[in-house]
Image (tube, rainbow, N blue to C red; front, side):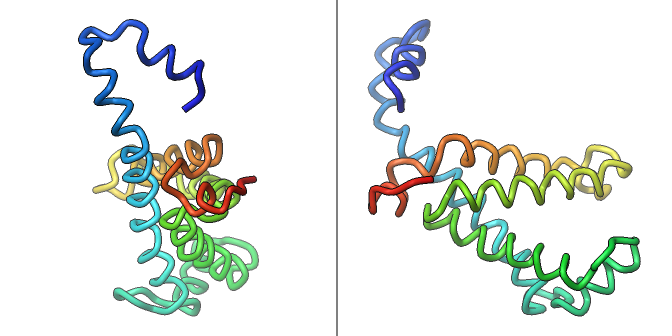
Length: 158
C-alpha cells in the first residue's frame, strides 16, 4: 500500500485502534480476492478448452459462438478458453498479474455486453457475474498482484 493510501485509510477511522488490524490483513485480503477470482475462472476455461465439468470443449464453444453470430468462432472459442483458464491460473499464482487481469477484464467487458439484454441478475443469465469478475480483474490490472504474489516474490511486475 502506498504511503498516501495508508494515510488516507487511517484518516477518519471511527475506531482508530482498528488500523493495525486492517494493516495486518491488507495482504491477506488482496490474496483472497485474487485467488478467488482466478479459481472461479479456471473451471470455465477448462469447460471451453477441454470439455471438463460438462463443458462443450472447443468444438461446443465454437458451435455456440457461431449460433449467436460471432465472427471467427473457432478462434474466439480458443481465445476465451485460454483467457479464462490460463488467465485464471496467473491470477491464482499472482504471476504476470497485470497482463492476465487486463485480458480477463477485456473478456468480461464482452461478456457483460453479451448478457446485458438479459438484465442484471445472473439467475436470469444477466450481467452481474461477469461484471463483478471484470471489476475484480480491473482492480488487479491497476494494482498488481499484491505482496503475496509470485510477481512480488521475483521482484518483477508489468
